[in-house]
Structure formats: structure tokens, C-alpha cells
Image 1: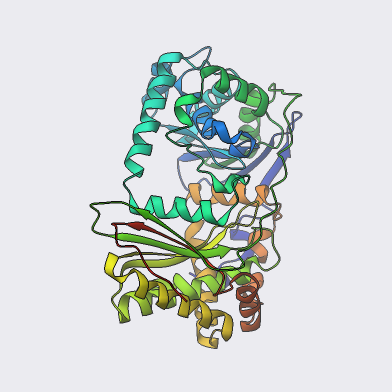
Image 2: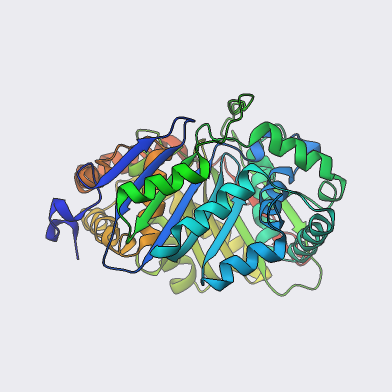
Length: 435
């Protein structure tokens, strides 16, 4: 169903989203949806790996993961039993700029998951045995990823695209060198300094009255204070590559190679973000993964899977094309991908392509809003990036006013086909030069 088939009153907007700011700075957004019996509690805090020193890479992630391992009033087993008894979920996970949380339960149990969230955020215990178990799980996961061609190619791509002093250069999860060096005192100190209510967002969506939901969140979190909570440091400047740079990660014994090629793309709040997103859809998403899917996989048979993405957030994220290929086909696949990038910046997309991707972006929005989860995540994004409560009401017009020339200008701003970062991970069959 397209947005044009929906009434404005059916979309979340200023008329049915209740927004309030608690005394300690927490922003609460509530959307009532009484068509289901469940409720979603989602949101984020203004802390993440941007605050950690490079030598402690992974500190924000292990701190966030440690919160659910026990509080001053609940053991790890007690937390899990309380959630299992009501069939609820609650998870906390760190990113670069923010630490997110997500909980789901029956509407009648909202107070329980909100109470647990408030408890673990404000008074975590960081029990030594649980932290060491968690550290072991993280290290095991990192060791497994060291043999994953897709992961290694993506890591190499980010490390080449962003300078070492940039947080996007590093993995949020840390490395096999840094994670073993993180102490419980490091974790306690990171939590004490960087976790707090300032900038926190809480979205509640489901079969609950807005005033009741706000009271529940207020009871769980409004007493939280951290007067020393710092503002996020500014992102270091990052320049797009001026010439093509290549990096190869040898992984002996693998039968597939993974290829990532791209450059610096837009941030979420850049004026040409939507134009870039639609251009990217033409390039490697719409239909059978766009132009690169049609050319590289369907026509030439050079890739098992191929597609493009823009990872736009608080800062300029990468605009990249990824492909899983036979190691013998790396150079040919790369050549075909670069040719499609050249085409994207050389000529406007066709009127049919523009119409197709506009219809796709408009048509998928109602699908994203079919679930409480989708609505909650949308509300969090709206607040995070300051999009305005009328964002969804304006969305269709925002997409439909884009022209072929807008998409071309966005592609030309970011993509320089002779100045890309290329990363390949796979068996020792080193790729040669590419144009």
C-alpha cells in the first residue's frame, strides 16, 4: 500500500505522538497502538565507542553488554528469570555514537522491563565472573570473524577509508589485542563517566496509554543524574580518497573472496542524503540488487552476491559496493563495478529508474510501520537526527520532489571512480590493478 492510499491521520505524527522531556533531560516519545497486546520499549543513550581511547577499543561495547550481567539489586540469573517469566526481551548494545536498547513484552509488563532497564543502567554491579565470561564470548567471536572473508574485507575497507584517529576506523567490538587488556575498573570508570540521562531517548509503542507509559518511564529513570556526563567529542575531519587505494587480506584455505569498493558518503543530516540514497538504490539495491546486480551477477556471472549501501549516521559514512566472488574473478568483478560507478556519475538515471525507486521508497514505508518495533525504531531515529514529528507526513513529498539531476549531482559529489578504496579478503590470489 502506498502512502497516498493512507490518510495522514493513520501515520505517526504530531497529532498522535506524545513527546515529553523529563526533568533530567530524557526525551520520551509514546505512540499508542491498541491493535496489539504487546509493547516495545526502545531508545538510546548518548554514549558509545567515540568516547573510548584507541588502546581500549571495545570498551564501550563490553560496558554496554555488561549491564545485563547483574545490578546491585538483581543477579544475572534474577534478571533473566524476571524476563523469562513474562516472555519478555531486553538487550543493550553499543554503537559508535550511541548505545541502544530494545525491549518487548506484553503491555501489562511494561513497568517490569522499564524497571529492569532503569536498574541496570543506574546501578550495574559488573560481577567479575560474568565479565570474564562475557570477555571470553567476545574474544571467541573475534577469533571466528578473523576467518570470515566478508568481515575481514569490511574491516580492511574501513581501516583504509578512515584515518587511525577516526572512530569509524575501528571496530566497535574491539580487537584481539585490545579486549584482553580492558579491566573491570576500566568498565566501571567508563560507565561512571559516560552513561547518563543527558541526550537519552526512550520510545514506547504499543497497547498502553501515553500518560501511563510516561509515568512508568519517569518512575524508572527520572531520578538518574550524572552531572559530569560529557558532550561527545567532534569527529575528526576525513577527506575522500584522492586516488585509488588497495588492500588485500590473505586468508589461506578459503574458496571465496569478498570485495568491498567505495568512498566517503553523506551523513544522515546532509541536504543530499535522500538523493544519494535513491542513487544508491539504482546502483545496487532495487530489484535484483540494482545495476551492479544485473551486470556483475546476472549478466557476467562474476559474483555470488553483490549490492551497494550507504551507511549514513552522525558523520559521513561509507558509500560502498560489496561482492562475494570466486577468487579468480576478483579483477573482472571489480572492473565491472567501477564501470557502473562511472555510469552513475556520467549520466542521469532514466526516468523509469527514478520512478521505480521513488515508488519503492514510498511503498516500503507503510511496511516498516506495520509493527511496534518498526514504529519505535522510526521514532528513535526521528528524535536522534532532529527530523521533526511531522517527518513521516512530509516523507512522500521529500522523495517525490527529487529529480534525475538531483541524483546525478549527489553521485558526482561523493563518487570519484578513479579515487576509491578497494579491499579484498580471500585466498592467496592477489588481485592486480584496476581502473
